[in-house]
Image (cartoon, rainbow over all chains, first blue to last red):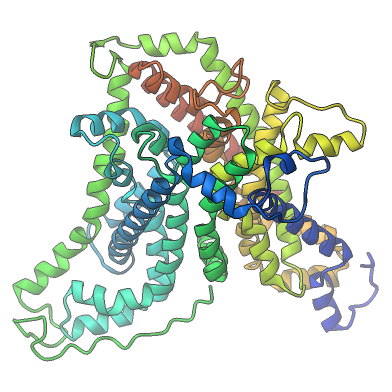
Length: 291
Length: 326
């Protein structure tokens, strides 16, 4: 772009030029894409190889034919309890997601559309606590609580602390503010609908796209949980992430099995991403603008 | 997400349905309706606050209480005052963990946010397959942290790792990445950056798109170059979002746990042979669940919280200056 222009250039040109991707932009994006995809590609390649091939120099870059055998070996590894881990993670992630979405839409509706004393303070409180690293801060008392209840080693010990999520309430509040016109709530009220009825018949349908994004984000986050399950669960009843850690510890040099396990552990997330990627990007961007 | 609202027709309340009192009209109606208006909001927000009280507020306060005691799980629980805190501030291992955490935080966050800005700016240009690129940079976020750590630990392997192989092409001797502070910090920081740069780019991109285009048009007419427009318009307008990403990165960075634990292989929370990459979060878990010194771990947790508060404040005053918003 020329630095100095003596007269205003033709309008459409001025509007366009800086928005068009130049060669540098294209190179940056292509490079970013390769960097993003490579480790994932590498993980899936390694899951189809043997350990001898995995340490070849230069390393193999194309899939091999040993995926089935690696999976068999993975499932046969007793001290990792991989299949148990997968099932447990699914149970935990689905339960937590349902709870967070339900509780967040209830609270989000109230904060966005209902007037009640203290609502501003309560919402502010949620925002403040989002800054506190509750995971690390609360780990000792939470563990004692679970010991006293006799729940250590059980899935409910993993599930309970994640049932609510300040981010979820915040997101649903924002979403409800935008997606549900006040007139709609008032009209329903005039028609004699109770608050719960408005929630069920007016709010929930309007919130559905936002709920989907929240559900996806919470599912991914919960599926990823590592520290608390590592502390509170026993090795023979793991979630998938701690199962991989056990695999890593016991068979750190058995690369392909480790990679088969990690590939299997991210597969559910990938399915979600391929199916709903567009909504996830949209949801993140939506939330970001308002943050 | 395009925010067009499929406006659901307000459920036409059937006469008599749901509302036995069956009052009509805009008036405030009977006692039941008034009770509904007054009380139901609290009922709606109560599940969050009840559960948060049990699993959020209670642990925070209780941690403070525990930190003032010599506290073992099943055994002794005697009041110790500030002893745990005093021991901590003179504990070299704790400060080592603090330095590691801060070090990795800085060397991961700074390049991450700079790269995210560059990437966001690139994603904001008109290019074919925009959605494809956006999904592409978010791909790392979809993988689990544990998986990232496993893959990168392998890539950073001393003998067979691809990174040493690649460096070897340029005549660099094989590096034992786990062995030294600097090398392990770099390895772990790249794991963090790889996973989060795209996410931050998307957040920044969203904010970029809210900047009115006439600002750029006016600047272009005044003869401002693209670079100048970036520094004089884009960056200042992005300030709130940059502050937001810095906050998120601060909390994430100072509570770093999974990557270094997996990098170690053994979940002993030692963070390498000399604790060269043990973080504060690992220190807390080690004190509590390997050495069963709950009081000490609780005190470390509160110091971590203080660290995060200080870090957030420093970052806040720092990011306030971004773009010279005088």
